[in-house]
Amino acid sequence: MSDVFGSLGDVGRLSIGAALRFARLRAGLTGADLAKRAGMSQAKVSRLETGKSPADPVDVRTLAQAMGLPADEAEALESLATQTYERMTDWRAEPRGLPQRQDEVGQLERQSSEIRVFNPSVIPGLLQTSSYARAVITTLASMLAPESAGQDAGKNLVTTVSRRMSRQEILASATKRFHFVITESVLGAGVGTPEDMIGQLQQIRYLTGLPNVSLKILPARSFVTVAPMHSFELLDRRAVIIDLFNTSMTAQSRSDIRLYHDLFERFDLAATADVDALLDEYTEYYRRQVAV
Image (cartoon, helix red, strand yellow):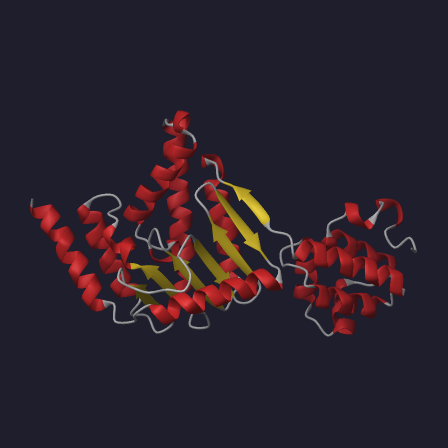
């Protein structure tokens, strides 16, 4: 293989972004030069090199051709891109990392045009009130690290809730579309206080009244072909975030994305868009709890 990576060593030891940048510099091209040759925007080339956008092997092949790389070097770059693209990124949950995780997810959401969320356990983060979010995050943090309670934990909680609320600003973007499917059990699983749940159901009514936001609910007495085992968030057809209790994984492979799109469609077909009656029922239930 030609020494496309020079003194940086073997391709397998580099990130795909670093490898692309080194190859571009070795070819004597600026980012603007390469973007023009490849028929891409300069911003996209920059995102690929810095790792802010996943490097699709098709894009990498286009860039390799635009740089005039020999066949073996182009093949090495494309192989690295394929390995990286199909790898799941595992974020291991721990309290101090919760604010950063909100920022990471928020960035992925801002880069997406259509977002699909399925959640069988809690109200999706993009629809949560601050009180509901505080209760969810407090419970998660205390179970992940019960010894970390204290002043720092309180500051961390405030920061995490604030950043989760900031993620919701994208709901006002008319260029984005949001599709949510939750199970009926989410409405009945009281999080926080009955007053918190009443406020949360009101929030759902308001946000799903936006023209670019839709919500469906999978009724308790539903027949589905696949059990609703865990939550996930589809970001266009670029990535899927899979949430388990103590970890969150981001997958970018086409096979994973196809699988989760199929799962979402199955749940979506079994769910009802007539959500007002269910929201009324559970609002009344929590009002009775307050009156007790």
